[in-house]
Image 1 (cartoon, rainbow, N blue to C red):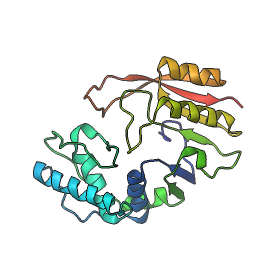
Image 2: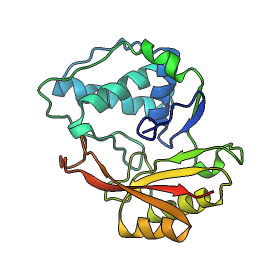
Image 3: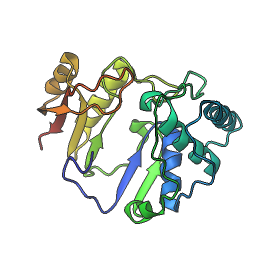
Image 4: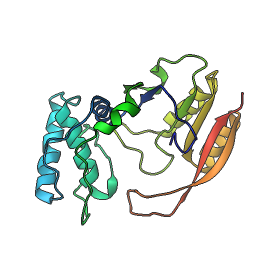
Length: 219
């Protein structure tokens, strides 16, 4: 999304509450070379899913193997979904792809991520300076919001919007253009820009463009 916003930051603090995603990016930064087999096979997929969930239970979510399996499961699972249950267990079923263009060598990402700090924590705890630019891309205000073991509720949406409003520096936030999201950010003094967001991956296979917003803070 930084490209869509016309941004090419030299350094940044990247945060996501999904620790598995941030572990994958951490290994990209180190120069990820995937050593496990990558094959579009149902039986193999479920063996890998079981192995990934076992690593979670064993507290090894920051391991190289966890990063490899996270990539494989997300490329091979149903309809591009990333979903965890309340026990933080990955539960997406096998996909229906005829062919998959897997990548095993990610070392070309090293320069792009060299000056990026990668963390996983609640947004309110982020170590920010008052003049930092914030781009917030939370789970959208739609039916599916469970990208980690905890759901991103409406109360979380309100808390995030209020937290962004209180930040002294520039802010941009993206979200689905639902009536209550528009009202929430408008009432907090944000400017609103509407756009049509492409849907190349969705939980139900619907690829119809969705109306989205970019809420920006007037300084």
